[in-house]
Length: 171
Image 1 (cartoon, rainbow, N blue to C red):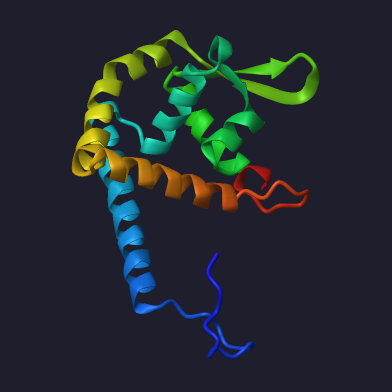
Image 2 (image 1 turned 30 degrees about the vertical axis):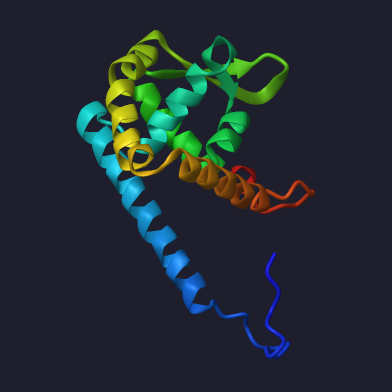
């Protein structure tokens, strides 16, 4: 972690340096453009937003293609309300169904249907191509490794494990 310069007053914000400001704005520009690029590709090709595709992928990768709704929200890093809305839309399309949890009367599972699995099978190649062209084809293997390490550090720092943490899936 960086420390404040010796000349900074204790009651003054730690303003970003010119270089930090450049890095920050590059990050914001890149992530905004990347999310828009992937969202448009999936809307055009599969008729769904990027976040819905991500939910289908997480279910496909889970044992028996099912996850508790709370686990799915945590995995996707979204609020329970947003997940509930997304799953309702995916249910309407026939790609996901909900099942009650036998051990917890209030709990539910989201389950990827065969139709949802087929949607993924048809649209994964185009999505992977969009990701590869937008990110990986532009970076050297060393840059890819550095990007992964940097993003992991940031994500871990934003997910405190103590009770009462303000995380999307707990809201």
